[in-house]
Image: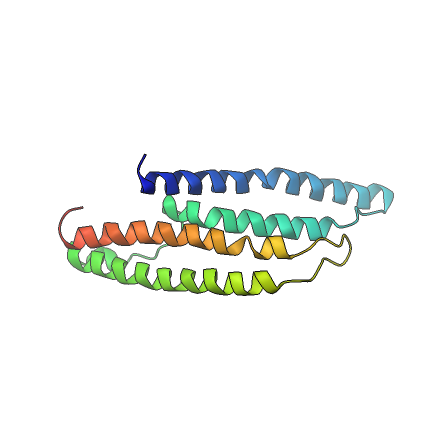
Length: 159
């Protein structure tokens, strides 16, 4: 198995894991609404747990969404250009995306390792959730790198 296939498989599994987090998040929120409506007693910490699960869900799905080209693209101008110009603009966009994700990895790590706070109600440490950003952004960066290579191959006429 090639390295790119391993990264893509990891991205896929991480995305599926994030999707699985939607189920407990929905069940918890539904139970909280029912408990609040019928017994006037909400489930303690529902907002905190839902927030943490949402962070994991969003960050684990970013790279997978890029892998399947699911991010929003506005192409009404680019689609009118020739193949070389389109590939050049895509390559420039992927370079910019790589830079942004590199900053996310760097700053996510810098902030995550210094994190010492805990949640208000359940006293859950925030560090693991903050440290989830760097590996997720790194997977996103690898997807951008694969796409950049594809765009550069298109520039050379080998797509």
